[in-house]
Image 1 (cartoon, rainbow, N blue to C red):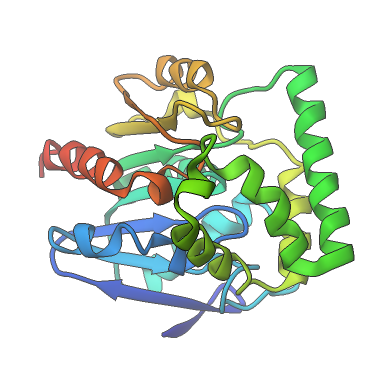
Image 2: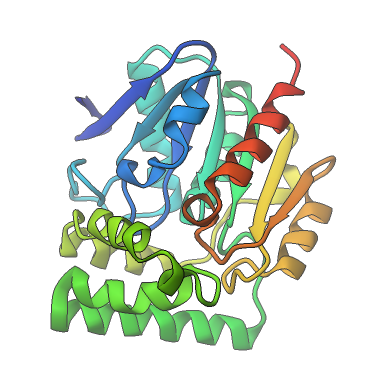
Length: 266
């Protein structure tokens, strides 16, 4: 379904019954990327998934992308759907959006899950240089071969070593999801990611779970531990995955999320 909010039409879906759980996908993904989570989460929650501006079937819009703009889109979407409070799960780039939204509208967030939240911890000069080089490489691949070129690069950083070769059908399915995105949208997303997050994670006050991958090269385990130290009272779960934890280990991932949320009071 689509709904007009904040000057664009946002593509969204809801599934299940109960309190709301909002899932925010990462850069280059879209709502289809939650295929390993929906059935499990919808048994306990009313799950809202949506395509971020610049992804999937949501309009690209005309504004310059930023985490603040994506957070404002989410606020307007929840207002339009008359959702007053929800638990929020943000994956990868979605983690920064989730944190930004939570800091802007703390009364609307019951609990927060930051999953493989790339960019959540300040990077060293060398790490920032490597990230910039990676973005430039993706943009060059995008110009040469479109989203298929982007996929060839992302495949090498998304998963733990050996996973893609061991699970070709699953990885091919994930590839098809990425290819649903418009090249111009992805180009604008990469430009936005060149700017560091403005969210001060140390000011997050709601119950927070951090999920990281043992082999994640974007939120390495040491950075995840540092993030846990920065967020008062937060919990940390490290899975034996690369960056794409919800894709690689859906059972363990879903269990960690649902156990965390089950302990949050009303």
